[in-house]
Length: 125
Image (cartoon, rainbow, N blue to C red; front, side, top):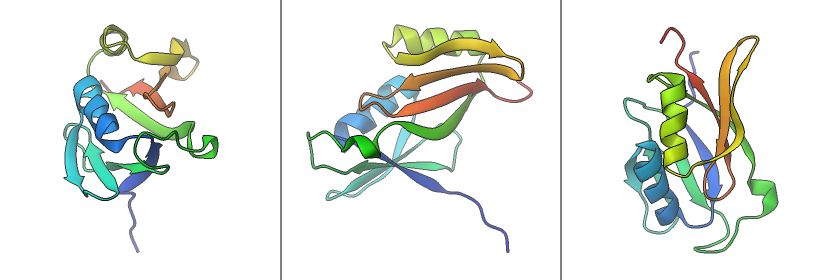
């Protein structure tokens, strides 16, 4: 049996505002929107979905147990330093500035709700 991951839920305080941030700042697009509960987004050319889940009700902060290191790794196909500089110009808060580790380049950044994402260059790019 073959399985593949297709989506992950990320806790947000306001899914409409979160979707706007992900589209305007990261260049993602809205895939689907349920008027009562969730919005799904995806990166360019990606079939993997991020389910923006309003866990506390519109405008209310999600419980701290729902926020933090998502473990989601994003690859960029543009030069890594340029991608990080673009995010910085868009006022993205880095929880770990870009750095070269023995195995390669990495940075971590936060969405407006405090969810943390890892960013690395696309392998082979």
